Length: 370
Ligand SMILES: Nc1nc2c(c(=O)[nH]1)N[C@H]1C(S)=C(S)[C@@H](COP(=O)(O)O)O[C@H]1N2
Ligand SMILES: [Mo]
Image 1 (cartoon, rainbow, N blue to C red):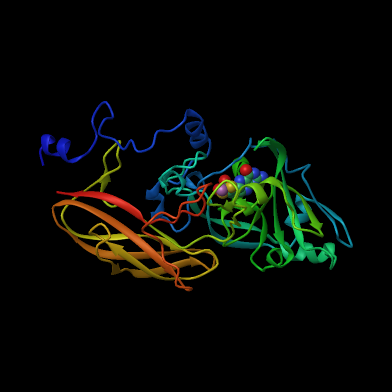
Image 2 (spheres, helix red, strand yellow):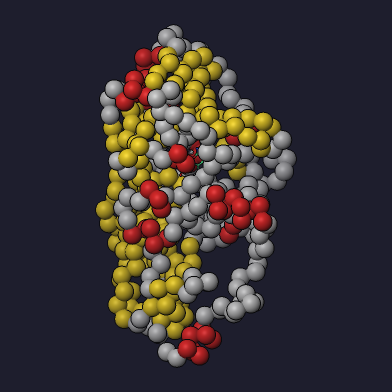
């Protein structure tokens, strides 16, 4: 292909006039996007996301923290309140588990109209090997009172959101907190947690969207009523209008992503690929459910073909998929969609909500084959 051919095939124009301008972004969203990086999609090639490529989401600031003086307090409706140091926690039974985590806002910026917030496209995802101790053992030692219905998890980070001064807090029912896989972790990918990922201690709730996995965890309180904090009742809701109380966001919806084939054009990320046989591949996950099917379309969603399911990285981690494609010269739109064991399949029309939560609309990858 000549330079002229490529210039006319790729949408980029020097002044940006060839770029997508269905969305214009506020500078504040850009600032959030710098703070809260995503996983570059080529990171889909790794079963375990390198720590520096795992997505980040931090509502306020990364707090100052020191493992030597850190204390986790467990109180409220418990028979035996505890105050644990990091060495107390490290002495407890140790488990390591790969867990796929996704931000509930992943896909938000692909909605139209776009909810203004952290403008994720598809990259708020990662799979890390987390090391820590099961929460359940600690709860058993604390002796949760039978009158308790939820645990409130409080991080050290403080800020203002929706006009409310708050610490980052989320709650979980006692039943969900007692599940075998829920962990208090102090290592990620074999190294101490980095400051931005919750050093020195965080919660990991496998299968749930990321907001549940409270970082910089300082306090667990057993309470007798549903906790109505900002991050529970004001946000992380599937709401369709301002006065709709909405439904709480919980486990991750089914989704597959494709490792973009070939090489990218600098601005648009449209792919350039040589014609011939190519194996398309990627990862798929479905919260606490299993992925039962992955399908690929190479004709912009007109027809779908079963992909081969590959290795599942862990009970609560994504699984590989692949599909062999004979790429013919021209422009193609590739898509992938997954189905979970309950028959939920990713939508091809946007699941619009006020806060842009749980948008698992299928990915669409533009590819120019030469
Ligand atoms: N204390 C605290 N915990 C938090 C958050 C936060 O802002 N503060 N963000 C949550 C959200 S919305 C997500 S998606 C995950 C992101 O975890 P990561 O940055 O380690 O990927 O952390 C969750 N835990
Ligand atoms: Mo998130």
